[in-house]
Length: 600
Image (cartoon, rainbow, N blue to C red; front, side, top):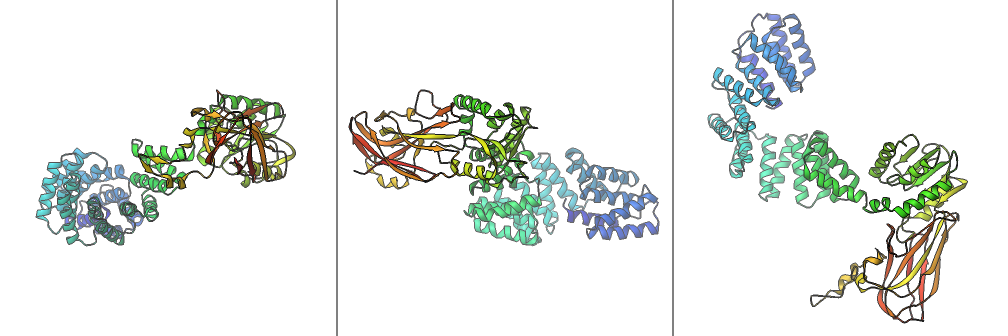
């Protein structure tokens, strides 16, 4: 029963029932005043008067009944139950109190008891449309759809001018997948009561399922004109806008739905999908998590959360943390670099592994920064689970945003980082270190790694070319599709493809991370060809110098590191012959390295 009906019922209970037992004129006048406040929605003032009457007359049946109705409206259904039961103890033949007791029982999930009391209310007052409709709704809640439909059809026939009868009949038919009957019932409800927002909303749902998007939108907009705070209508309008392809227009309606009803599982789920479709991955994950808190068994939300997390947390994080060679080398380098009472800054902390290595090596405190909030939160959790919460602080922000005295109490003695991709410079390591040296580190701070060298080799691999180029397929020329080919290098494991190495490795560029001002470079390198073949591309690998003695390499070998190799495909493969010198054009702008065979 909705709020409007409860107010109406409360009014009827004062109008239809006889004088209260044991009452007096003063109490009755005060109850009349309280009822007027109750009907206007001034619930606190009305409740205060009801309770005042009961302090003077604790068993006043009308005061108990009306207080029970009000407390049920305010969500205190268990308390309401006690008040109405006491009212019926004093006045057992009250159809209105019996009806409202059944209404409370139904809301508490005590469906069988509710059915009995709705039946009792009807026996006390045969012409009681609210009780007959609610009895039908209770049968529906109990799963007895046949009895529910019998009651609701009878109510609609006996009371054709009662919109709630047609509405609940339509809702039950909709649940039974009788959409034609449901639509007719909702339309009848709207004929009787044009401002029936729930009927507009449910009719819109049926029209949307039938493919009448324009009609559905019209009815939803009507529902929201009637009731702008109708959460279900906002959710449905969001779905309509999404089906029209206007996802950005859908999002405000889903957001409004969850603002109005924070426990609206479906709206949280729909909002998560809309955020995900528009690239708002963090917000999407949050929405899916809220849906799962409300309904842990909602598998669609679990699938959506998994997709969002895969976008938030690239899969290479797992390979990186499982890279034993990398872990052992970094651990050794950090142990050699951490001094007593050192403050360590870990930029790009990820899951916090390097931060924990530094803490284990004896650092006074480690500050890690990680831009992806869910990963930063997880790093904090992992540090705590390893007993290092007091010595590691993970900051969910970019190092450029760190403020001395606010995020860091003092400049760091040691910087550790692994902002390196297969192409060496792609994650902005030179700029990040340069900023840290100027703003976050002591002048004599150590850096792990301290630098690295990039190497190139020439390769033949038609299979690798097919990963990013196409010529003919099934007898058709599909070369125009190459307009979508990568403009940069491919990130691949060379050993995963049939290949032939056509040259030894040639040193291309060296980078010293202690150099305060790295500069762009361009050069041409002669690369001795060691085997005949068709050069499909240039492979880049690097040696990372963690300290003067400890290094890591990404050169193709039997046991690769988690880093792949960067492979620059030639636009046109070039035949090479053993003994000649191939000319390699190389350049970098401190952010990206470019490699290709020089033009003849």
